[in-house]
Image 1 (cartoon, rainbow, N blue to C red):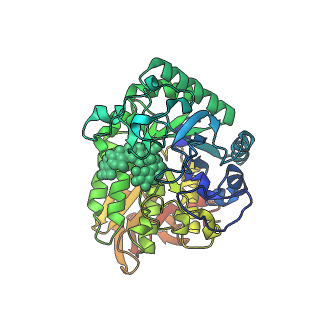
Image 2: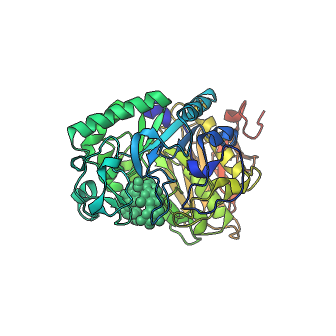
Image 3: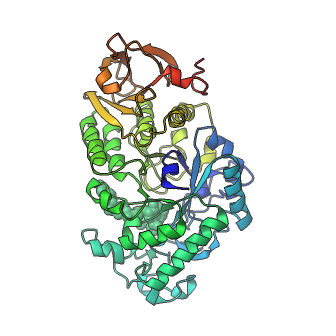
Length: 475
Ligand code: ABC
């Protein structure tokens, strides 16, 4: 699937081992550093849960065979310690199961994104004594860079040295070798067609030299969103010359800081968004507030409305929304592995304060995309009418979403906000729906929209454009 098509999707991130078991059992996992039993079959059985939340695509953990042994950090339940890239990880299921997952998604009109790693393999021995013969296909030392720990202030070291540590070193593949490149290109081409993969989440993108990526991308033939774990916006424009998309880590940091407390800086978020869009096309970036590597947002604050605002912002900002499993259950694990809770302990509840919230946001975004061919191309206009509030206007006039987010917190009370038509693009006496609460609103004779803003996100949309949609039953 192309980048333009991916820009219209909304992705749910699944940690395969932690999402659902084949037999649907919900008893706890003995240890969060062991396999907990989640499988591709378990996932297939729970696709309604994901699709009913409004998602159109699922990102799953790496699928290849990993090292099996018990390490200092447990076993490879996350999938990032590859041993044999030509075999599947049997803990997650069989070849037939993975194909079935792909076809089950496609039958629903949904898409499959697979996490992939080319930067390294995994080893459970000291860097000096790595047994390369255990790897497939690169089973000799000369296909790897010699060991050195990464020095993040040296660009060359980020590419050539090894991630992991001396307990669990991640032998760094010599990706500049033309034979290695040919092998990876053949491998990805094959995997994409064999399993009907529509998109790729590429691990450790910045640890592989940039000129590796165009050839790999051409072989893959689909959208790739690269993980560049870096909050500096300045490095992104050049990366986007080599790869179709990237995780939006800069906005992740500004957004977290703005909403993690009632004194977070909204100004820094507005400035950051303007910096990003001034430098690059933002529609192919992955928007997120949580993932499996960082402390979950609710570990920073227990405030429900701050979490709801942060999620709403993720879904309505520029880029492809990515929600990590468990956000809809307000899970609050902090560092890895505590942020990798088995989802089944929630019993997949759908009537809490987050599942319907996410569903509504996906629905309004999906609706805006279906009626406005330019919605995803329109780079949102951020505005901060006061120090506690950020407004985003996104979409062509006539079918634009104007969303209002605040960090006053659950006990912050309400204040009046007025937005002029020159900002919103709304017209005089226009009938609008505030879709989060399904209430109506009308602009005044000069097109100004005034309302009382409480702690929760408000999302205004022209009522006429909701007709026929599932949102708020507008007739
Ligand atoms: C295991 C244990 C951990 C233990 C660790 C030593 O070993 O679980 O408890 O602390 C996988 C597993 C992990 C496992 C690791 C290592 O492998 O999931 O459980 O940790 O064995 C990707 C994946 C991630 C995966 C790997 C490895 C890579 O998403 O799940 O981890 O395949 C770096 C990489 C990044 C990587 C991340 C974990 O480490 O670049 O690709 N993620 C700075 C650096 C970043 C660095 C980051 C975290 O620190 O610049 O490159 O990411 O170490 C901002 C700056 C950023 C800065 C942050 C901290 O601050 O702008 O640049 O990031 O302000």
